[in-house]
Structures are given as structure tokens and as C-alpha cells.
Image (cartoon, rainbow, N blue to C red):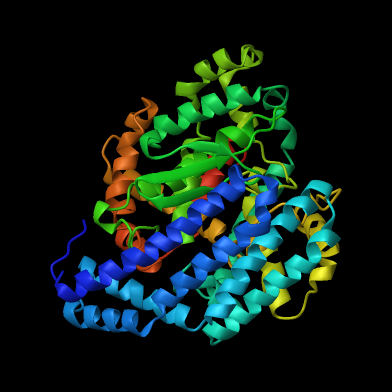
Length: 507
């Protein structure tokens, strides 16, 4: 648990400064949430200026000589005990300020304006499936990414600098090695399932399911697993996300297709996993850099655990399927086993966020290859639609019929988030590692989950992961929780056990 043994005057002074910076950043987050959910279209004209102003002032405050002096004094006062909150706060502030100081304030403000314009162009391009409309903004975002990498500096690959925005300490070569191992160990399962694809149908989750009923039932599931609506809410957006203002206000969005049940149900559980992580950080970390997740990979482990390991399990739906059938009478004659197969059907798909657990990581590998290829100068953004179609066909055997279902489907590049995508697959691996560890450490965990008592798992996650926020570097946190580094082993074992049984396979 958190402990602050050395909260002297230097620590208090640094904390006060970090509170100010957090308030600016969180205000920008509120404006971003509004832009995604409720802002009228005309608001885009000035929202970029609002965000640019907040970004510029936050950056100036974080990188000022005064803040640097506060950090240095707090580090000297705190000592070197890694379990001491004061040590962790000073170290994380040092990491953030050092990186930020390498970015000119003019660059930060210019990028914030460009991100808003790019986001607007992406929405329109996606709506009309017109990649050329988005291309100038996309080139701008990748130009900012290259410039940021140059400003931050790197030893081996420009992508290393960008990964550091989301996964502190991770290197491009590490991701490439993990992906190579994962691909080699997953491909045999993909091929085995393909030979038995007709054993599972998802017809029962395709039909007509009203938006209002989907939203209401998804909210019930979110509350049941532990999302606190006293400190959160659900809204609709083009791309589902969770956003943290403080642990006291963590909001999620979802999306609904009235002809397909899965996206709303599991997208809501996914974002609830993110939100519960933020709601579980230590109270004393509010308005400080520690009051967030350890990394995007660790964050994704929480969303994928609740979405897939819990939410797509047979034991979860033994509890909830009768109630789902009451809400959607069209499922009344569909057996639990058929429904379970439908929500877990493995079929190469066009859309990443709707991909099954077995093929999902291939979507991430594609994006990683494109991002690194563009930064290396081996791929041209103008060729993106053709590259995307060719590699989707080569890797998953499907070809997008248009750009909206291809290279325009994700929001990330319109926000300049180059380097983000690998964290999704890292999160998949960690979800299985963490869940396996919980099973070892919590007596009677599975029995409690079978009864619908999800608080037992959530309590373990809160103690071992959530509470610590960003206190420990991600690799350190993983070792503290599991006793070893991130590994594909538990995840691959989980996939073979689950889908081998579902499709009648033997490893």
C-alpha cells in the first residue's frame, strides 16, 4: 500500500506545483471529452485554440526552472526507497519534466491545434470513406511524431521515443520480439480453428437489438463488475474510450449497432475495466502524476480482462444470460451454449475493436508494422489504403471494401498517438498473467466469480495493481505482481484452453 515516510517541505512544495499542472491537464481532458460527446460541430473552430492554450501553459509550468528546482529539492529530500510515495512522486515528476523540457512550447501548442483539425478531418473522412480528405492531416500528425522523436532523442529507433509516451522503458526491439513470439505461437491455433470454422455461428447476436435496451443492459453489467456510477457516467461516441479527470470522476463512452449485439456489451465492459483502474488509484494520488495507470499496457490488461476473460466466459453468462433473454426475447430459444459460441466466434474481421481474441493481435501487429515502416521511410502515407488492404489480405485473409473499414477505422492517428497501438497486445498478455496470478493467490476465486461476486477479483486488482497508480515503472509492477517479466505464455495457454474446447481442438 502507499506510504509517504519523507513528506517534508520540499515534497509539499512540489506536490502543490504538480496539483496546478494536473488541474490544467484535467481541464483540457474535460474539453476533449466534450468534443467527443456533446460539442456542436461549430465548436471545432475554436476548441483547438482552447486546448492549445491549456497545453502551452501546462507545458510551461512543468518545464519551468522553478519546477525543476522543486523536483531536485524533493528528490534530495526523499531518498531512494522505491516504496516511498515521496520518492515515487519526485521520480515520476522528474521523468515527465525531463521529457517535456525537450519539447519546445511552440511545438506543443502547434500540435494541440493540429490535433483538433486532424480529428475533425478524420471524422469527415471516416463518414464518407474518403482517405484523401484525411491524408494531409495524417501526414501532419506523423510529421509531429517524427519531430517529437527527434526532440526526445533515442538510441536505436525513433519509435523508441514515442513508445516512451505510453510504455515507459519499452523498446521497439522488445515489442518486435514479443510480437514474433506471439505470432508463431498463435498461428497454429488460427489455422486449426479455420479448419473447424463451421462449428460456431454468431447468427444469434445479429438481428435487431434496440439502442436503448443495449445501453441499459450494458450499464447494468458495468455496475455489476464494479464501475462506480457515483463517480462516472456512460455516453455515446464514434470511438469508445475512458477518460480520467480524477478518481472521483472517470467517464466512459460506448457505441451501439442495432444489428449487432457484441460491440455495445463488450465495448462497455472494456471501457469499464479502464475506468475501474482509475477509480481504484490511491486517494492521496489525486491531482498528481501518480494518479493514473502505470502504463497503457497495464491499463489495457484491465480492460481486456473484464471484457474477455470475465465478460466472454461461460461462467459469466450462466449468471447473466437469463436476464439478457428477458431484455431481448429474440434470444429466448437460443441456448446458453450457442450464445457463448456466438460471442466468442473466431473469424478474421475488418474492424480491430470487434476482432475476436485469437485474431485481435494481428490487427495490432499490422499497425505496428505500418507505424515503424513510415518512421523508417520504408512506407508512404499516401499509399496507406493499398498497404492496408494488401496486408489485411495477407495476414487475415480479408480485404476492406472501403477506407472506413480499413485504414480510417481508428481514432489514434488523428490524435497524433503514434506508438500507442502495441500497448493493446501487451495488455492482452498481461490480462492473462494477472488473472492467473489472482487465481493462485485468492482462495475460492472461481467459486465467487461463478456466483457473480466480482468484487473478490476487483479487490485483488485494487490491492495489487490499481492502488499503486503510476508509482512503479510498468516492468517493475509486473514483476511485483507476477514474479517475472511480461510473457506470452499464460495468454497463449488461455487461448488454447478456451478456444480448443469451443472448437473441439487438441494442441
